[in-house]
Image (cartoon, rainbow, N blue to C red):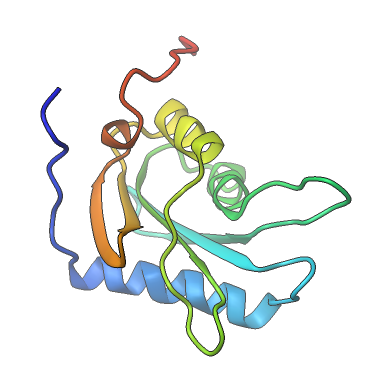
Length: 137
């Protein structure tokens, strides 16, 4: 399988990262909310979410943001990003395996902005999970 094609970030991508950082800044709580995510939809609207920690496990920020978009009638996600708080910075994160599967299920052609060895890149969701399980929705 060929290596995924990475693309440079655009001004719109930087706006999406800023939205994820903003939702985390407004809601950060060290033990409960440490990751923020943002999705942009085909309509151009941006939806955000934060992770929800609970005893043992809680949903990541990405499914919360995806759910916010779908709850508002959106069906086409075009890009997604997650960030965390690290000191006074809010670096971009790579989605975990569960989130990669969720994004591929709901938005396989969406651009995912992620961090790889300290460099922020983007590629289609399907490129981040080769050989993914297909649930045939």
